[in-house]
Length: 401
Image: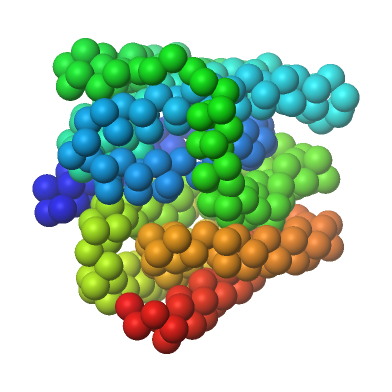
């Protein structure tokens, strides 16, 4: 556990350093419009990625962690998840193609959407959930550092003017594909885990076992990624770019808590009595970090992004505040309810508040554009965090742990 956390902490540190090197350069080179086009494509691909992940980042991690001493069982889990994700990748690719054909805004962004889609097979062949489950996160760290290093160097080489924004997702996709090949070599040829032939019955069973977590992960896209897509349709690339300018640095801070969550998830799956310690670490660090980032918001945006992104300051502050509620949701939802196989209760709560968020997003975005997106996310994360906390309290009272 301590070693995993150390590797992930180092990875997170690198996650701060590399974007701080590239984002200011990209902001001044491709401008708010280029950022906006990247943001639109990223928001669409989030839907695709969520479909392809199908909740396996948690359920498969949990299953591998609980069976990691049984190599044959782990190989079976690895194979079933691999084939299931490849099937979902094909389905999502067909769906995205139909959207590009039928919706004008999607046709306008067809090239960047197609290039961004290449990230999906890259993610499939880079099974970080597997490394997390067997608690060998140093390999995830090494591969991710390789991706970030290649991407950072390539940005300064290939992106020289506004029209070069198209290379940003292309470089990211190439990095994931290269590291995916390396990860497969390590898992199959060095560690000796086997890939079993696909069997439709097992693939469907694997999908069914993760459906509740998938729905729980998908529903926040109704207020999150969908809001960015709507902003692109109603506000245009520049509005998307200003939102993206504020969101990008918040995502860096958010990744810290994703690292904490992922590092503790397999540990808490085996040591449920340690959850109270995790509560103090995760929510406490999120609250302290949020206060500091809100105070420093003008400095961060103005120095790193430039005058064109002045409107991103308020976006940044609103989204940073929302991270406190997101950490509560992760602490009591992902790292408690899912571990205790309460996916269905969490799913129902997430579905309800995500639909409410989608309905709120429409008037908020129409009236307040990029600020409306940020306000939608803040309100929804508040309710999702509160509901996860209440569900966890009710479960603890009933079962005593």
